[in-house]
Length: 180
Image (tube, rainbow, N blue to C red):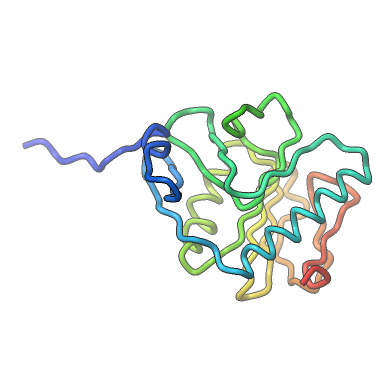
């Protein structure tokens, strides 16, 4: 007797979702997304603004994209994520549909419904896909887990009151408490 295989999905299934329905796809498994709350959106807005201002001051060329923004990890049709914030410095990865490959820096804002994904599955997936830096911002605990996948020098946990060093930009720190 043959074992039943779990459904595997592709990016075609993501694009076939009804208008307004959002989901992510990791290794062919679809994960539906709930609408974010106000604090989540406030953090996405403020962090995006802070990063954009830094890049402009430094005459940098990296691009910042808040969610919803399609990231096709591993450049296949089995992995599609919408990080809360994606920073891409290699413009050759940008297409009309989004980012093909790993962004340089990804920030996820944790909510109760995404905690398992952000701290587990996405942490592994982002690291293996080639993301250089990954932040998990937890508003409930007022802390940020920083993962420096490139050098591992600044990996650690920081509070909202701390000056958090940005790994991909050597002279940039963010203090979240000052933004709220």
